[in-house]
Length: 390
Ligand SMILES: Cc1cc2nc3c(=O)[nH]c(=O)nc-3n(C[C@H](O)[C@H](O)[C@H](O)COP(=O)(O)OP(=O)(O)OC[C@H]3O[C@@H](n4cnc5c(N)ncnc54)[C@H](O)[C@@H]3O)c2cc1C
Image 1 (cartoon, rainbow, N blue to C red):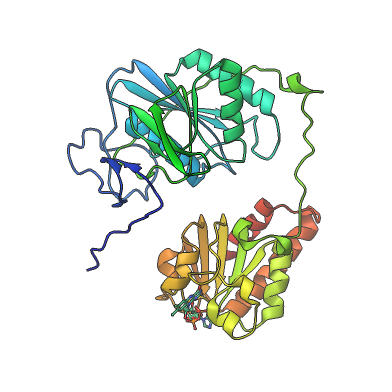
Image 2: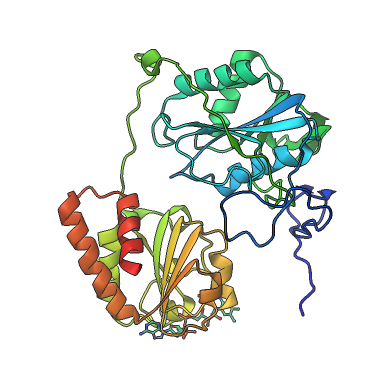
């Protein structure tokens, strides 16, 4: 059995369920007192976890983040986990989600969930979001507000709030515990620490998001009555410009179809990518065979990708390839061999011929596009894929 632990030398510290660690040892889980072993939903949960706290809350830590298509991304989950890990038993973790959220808030560590479905990560409404956050802060009077320090809305919102409320703030936080935060400064040549400020903007990967407990996960009906048009004339949303997926760097692609040695009909595969609006990736064997250019290679000696959807056609899932897709959210494998290693990594595996599946998907996607108009968005395409694979 391999007992070697993984070490990420880039992190100064990581906060885990066992406290701060220089070395990421992975999650140990808790086998101790399982006071409240059940929490509704999530049948995939391996083992019931205890509630973090059942004490009457005296304080609140507020975590605010945008949802992306109903879910929080890794960075937002880490931020929520960071709050839950440093919260003591008298502190309640309240999660404020901008956008629709259909995830399991309790499993992510939240005691309360406030969903603001009127907001959408893809639209630009900084003042309305600021008003909503300020109203939530007024309602809950949190001791700290945590947000992921990202470039997709949360980092900006945290800075705006700190400036508007004249609150103490720490940005790009890479190290955190219940008493202090720390960040690199002076172009990463120095490391600065300070006591926990009111607003904490957490850098990615400072917290291990896997928790040994669950939160209460209570959904709160909280109405934000802010006037959505309040910023008219101040901020103008120019919308999102769609670009050809083929022009996108693979590292930035949200939807990737990838071909391995099991793909022989490359033109049909490329047609599928174009129809779905997906970027093209490939295994090293497919690249070595001359079917794709080297910049399409995904894996240890190729690109590392973070797509929401990654479809692997005829790819065995060698360890070097899996290394490149470790951060992908949903992996779908199409392979003739049910025992191929990719099946262990995949969220969904279709035991089928790659060429037949590609042809069927081409037909289904083209039919769906015709029915819905040519402007089919990623979501539609993803639904087509999932529908066709079902
Ligand atoms: C130092 C080093 C670095 C490497 N770096 C990388 C890297 O960055 N990226 C990378 O990908 N690899 C890398 N490799 C190579 C890696 O080990 C594998 O050899 C490679 O990933 C295999 O590619 P594959 O899965 O496409 O091909 P194969 O291993 O040949 O697998 C093909 C798969 O397709 C399935 N299949 C066959 N026909 C069909 C069909 N008609 N329909 C459906 N399924 C079918 C088979 O069941 C099989 O699972 C590296 C290797 C080394 C030693």
